[in-house]
Image (tube, rainbow, N blue to C red; front, side):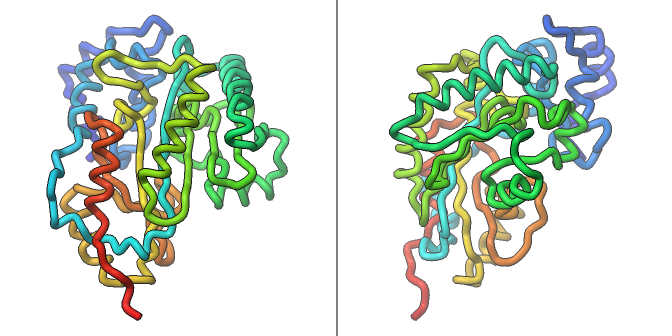
Length: 318
């Protein structure tokens, strides 16, 4: 059952249906995806930042359900062999202040946001040399290859499509990639910016240090949407706060003993194990993406510390 179904009671629905945000969005706009696809885990997307206040009874419940637990000194978490960690990935989500979110954007506004972010990406040189490409200019076969390598995104998520996030495709969508392919900035996917940085091995601290540099350069050019209580606001309420996700790409074929403890932690709701190709992609082969699912209410420092708790200091057998 989705969180939408759990928390949107008949009484709430009747009351919230009377309300409208300053941008003209109603409850029907917020819950469109979850109503169409009841199998959705969450079921709502915010079309603007004001939705968090106007429909706070619904958003507050869902945000609370993603509050991160305290994991201090949890020795039972140490189940990933560092030698089997192929890479570390940090993703940061941001939306621009003064603009509605992707689920509510017009074609013209998508293009305006794209232009602002593309201009800001130029400030990353010479520290992060790369280039920006508009999706409309990328041949389909090349874009498909970039999507498979997580260097771009496509209009293939049914939940986001139902919310209106894929509307006007591919207008207003671009991606910035560095020449070394470590940094990728997705423009107008689920949020205005999805900034992802990948380094080889179990290197959360080094990856975070580079990400802080990237975000500092972008923040000097862009005004991000932030709430005094909730932190950075995102389309999906599961990402609010520092709006950061840290994950290890793990090759379970290198150490098969990791699979059972990972499955136990996943069943207990402590960690999230995804396909290496990203959310809503089927798991295939031995590569998986491991992170903590509940990330709301903790700092970036605490998130990095928690990821270190997953690493078991052992060596692969000779």
